[in-house]
Image (cartoon, rainbow, N blue to C red):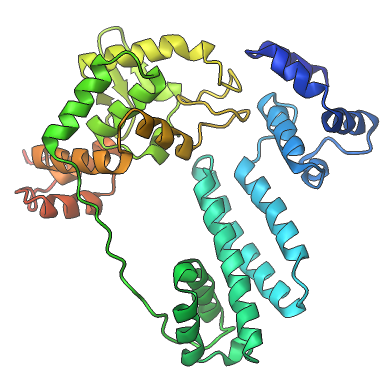
Length: 371
């Protein structure tokens, strides 16, 4: 356990780490690992309680290289799923939910994790799907109906009664239809119209100037706000940026959002340089080895997107409306395929946006036109 202790003492605020080490549940878990009662493996730590202590310790062990790296969100979801299934008494409901989670959800989550660390949104969505799938199956049993005899009237009644939670349940229902465990019937749809009007261009530029000139907000909030207002980056993507995505050659600072990397204008570049100079000493950084541009409190994990959204709103930046205003302005200034490639958007998204904005690039074809 010496490497773990060295890691804890090497971090900022070692006093708080020592206080954590003295907690009775932490001492008990460390003693169990030292004596071999709990094996020093992911499987050994997976079922230990309290789960928050075991999870935090496992994060530290992975971050220090003592345990092999496994996506943290998948590990947490597996633990939640085991606890959730243990509460289900009906064997048929248990079997269906276990199959759904194993063959549909876990396969998708692992495929996403292979491309990069998962955020909390995919596993949160998976939990909702399991919860609502279980609720639907219990509701169906109360109507004295089994899944293989489910009728259109049953599905219509469920969507009428459970309107607010219908979307998570539909993923399970589609999977059941494809797997042949229920008849192919129509899933009711209802379009929910939301006001997604972006802010006016003048307002966006006013906010951007304030972000660059006002020194009172925290640097991390100002840097994130600049990426939202200037390059239309969603908060979920901003928190996944690493320090390696920022390249400073002494003259130009670029950020790797797409291909090629995007140069930062001089005021934003100066802001980024100041932030990177402060970055190694951030008091909230849980690990020096994580490399996240916006490190979180959990070892090796980035800041949660909800936390960053809250910080942006605290300084008067509406993330979604600011991003919508920025992307609509960008597609009016350059062809949609160019914007999509440079800023990491899907080309269909930018093409749709330029049509909405009344742009004239709809017939632009990317590539070399000299031949």
